[in-house]
Amino acid sequence: MFCYRHPRFGIPNLMIYIVIGNVAIWLLAMMDTTGKLIGFLSFSPALILRGQIWRLVTFAFIPNGFGYLSLISFYFYYIIGSTIEREWGSGKFTVYFLTGMLLTIIYGFVAYYVFKVNCYLTAFYIYMSIFMAFATLYPDTIVMLFLVLPIKMKWLGILDAVYFIGMALTKPFPMNLLPVVAILNYLLFCGGYLLDFFGPERKKQRRDTVSFKSEVRRIKYEQKNKPYNRKCSVCGRTDADFPDLEFRYCSRCAGYHCFCIDHINNHVHFTE
Image (cartoon, rainbow, N blue to C red; front, top):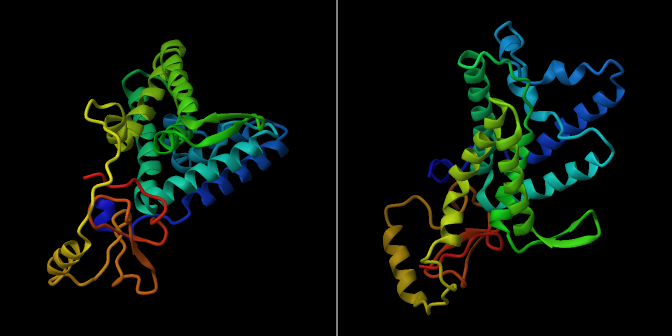
């Protein structure tokens, strides 16, 4: 709701900056002969309290791996992150990533003060939660596993969930709770999609006949006191704020819903 009311909030193309940061640290780590770079950038409550506040940000740009195959993962995460941003809008995707960072930071300090453990943390589980979000939004999308085996994202998402559970059960306390923190962030944003998918009320999408003339009259009546004529049902941008932006109406949605050109082909169809 916040993102819909503040359509200009967020960092457009956030995933580009994240990937650039990952690639930069990956290159520096390849040249680091001492092996101390990652420890210098990781999240550490004890060192942050000593003034090394850059760790509050830099931990989010540490890559999940440092082999040459990491270059493929950078490209893959750019694709799925950009796709989620087009689906949700820049605001919601930015909040999703920042919330993951914030929950990780809070947990790190809780572990430090309550459990007396100085955790060196990265954003590994944040990136894994982005992967799960993509699998939830596009479960039937087929990707080439290991560049050879075609597999649907929903199965990879299930494997990702099993991995989270395995880490929660096998990692030593309190580090085993970190996957749970990432899952909480995922459920906060994607829990509704899961309820729609697994809920008993889920039915085959209906294609109800819509009286567009009556809907047009209703929309015009509602917009008499509004400063715009068209508003995207996904990102909330209006023709008043973005006069050069193209808007269209989706004939597959139940009702009369307007979308900007960025989301007319990338949105979850309204069913009622």
